Image 1 (cartoon, one colour):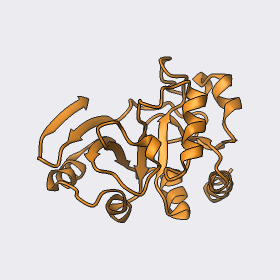
Image 2 (cartoon, helix red, strand yellow):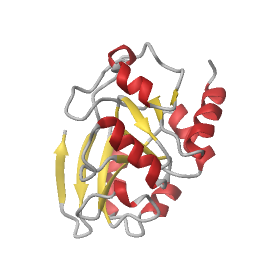
Image 3 (spheres, one colour):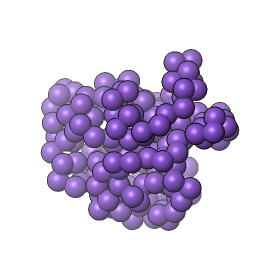
Image 4 (cartoon, one colour):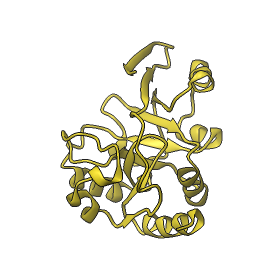
Length: 188
């Protein structure tokens, strides 16, 4: 399978409100258009996850970051520049995304991606991509495609046909940054 074909197939599903199972720069993820509230609901239902537990959103560059956040603390860019592994930043006051992915404290976790499939898919979507681990809420996070439960595979509208043999690295580091410049490491 080639990456362009997979980007095309995934894009067609996403633009019609579907959800996909796809490889990220960390673990396998379940995703959808981060601006589509109904698609986000499908993911919560599939994961059997409370809607109060927010999910993260992938971005493919500065322009998309500024589209989601009007104010970005300077330290956010410094952290992203210095990070040697995938890092999720939780920032205040997101906008232009589905309300049901924003946390109760009006924050949103975002991660810049370099993984070619994710990057190209968002280039095509021109929108951020929801990303949450490919498991039922509370169950272990699968490190390989083979470990993903049949329930999840059957529950998505499309399974990306790339990297099925890849063993995933650990999930990303998570750092919460307030507009008041407070920094809190949530997961190393």
